[in-house]
Image 1 (cartoon, rainbow, N blue to C red):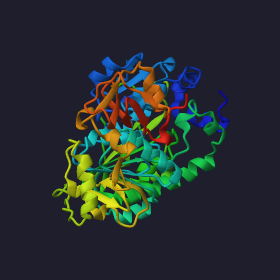
Image 2: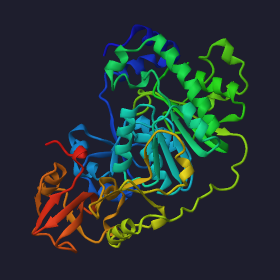
Image 3: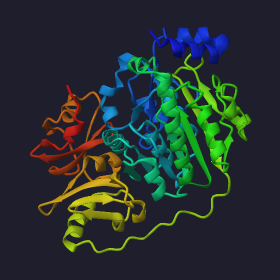
Length: 467
């Protein structure tokens, strides 16, 4: 692999005696990883169910290496949202951030959704996840991944960090900033990124990161935690950004990260003289670097910080008032009489016939551009309710009155995922006609309508498997 000469010279100065091993790692094959979605399935159940060749990622309880020939992106369980395909080192930031159910969590640079879905699994449907990306197209990919994973409590926004900070002053208990960077740690994965690398790009990214992290601090509650990460080796973007943050936000302090074999301490030794004098710069050894010659993944940097003070009180929950037209309410009640998912009707909103489950207070919406506030349930059309794909993904098979459950080896599963009509006259669902929750080995894939033994396909057209 041909890498930029200037980059290699910098890495040689950075690594010293380890430079040879680092360089040799680029000749080794990439490691591929998947992360189990514990919102839907336990790790133990997952291991028993999937036909892949899995090897545990040592520092992650729900992360596994898989073999390239497994091709998990083509398996029905991928479409069921049972796992996320993610570079192994990139799983670490969300793993380290100490999220607990009930927290208000922000993923500020969230697309395409690997870290956001991991945070959602930690929340277990409680509290709130705000997942943001400034790119509208990337935010759409983010929304799809959040919906596939069955997330009910997400607010997906598309705003610049400064606008977010205006809306969410001292709102979040935990914030993840996986900052846009020069991508040095992913050169083995993406050679095009290596060709586009320059010192000017490093400097530009560092400037952006310094602004983003300061906006994130504004949104963090006193006593809250922030995890900063990049996929670059550049000191300017890593220790340099954190030193700058400590200088301009003295309320922030670095915290030790639970240690794993293969981690490397960060440090101030690569910083320029102007940052060497920053108060707290000696704590930069608490940061973590991941190098591909030391661990089974690509390059990464992590810094865990805490905002001084104590978390006070709990988040206020606003009770919604009624007022939904009675005809709409009746249509919804008719359908929801077959649903046992735990929620209250007052948390369901109808906007121009579109139906949403909104678990958090209305003030969270503010004036920010957003793609989704809560879970999209479906649409009221011609006096009937048509359930949405996202709704199916958030259900368990036990939470709907009638299901069609296919085995992973049944060829009808792939035909269904491709959008085809499926014959199901050999199946015995609770109802012989009408809406069915279509599942694979007990895990929902989407909706269909049964008519005379034939399943009319209602799988989302934009999510279909290409044969």
